Image 1: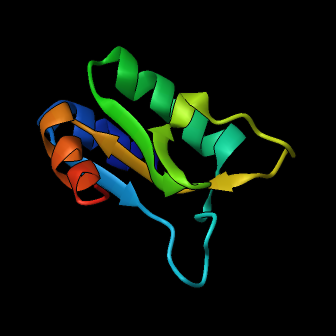
Image 2: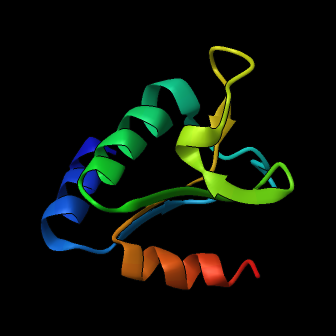
Length: 90
């Protein structure tokens, strides 16, 4: 994940790991993968969202973990590309 996010910061684009029917809460861990990378992406001027998660589209940094190994879906990258994906949830 680190190398994918590094490439996304350097060259633009989007990193997606959305929830699906098998993994309704996503696969990446919120505390160890989601929050640190979301912080870096947003500091670089990008967007880090969960997509549709727990009934709404929200920023990853706004998700409050209940347990140490909570998982969440991840959509992060440049604002232009993320806004196109997030518009599909409307």
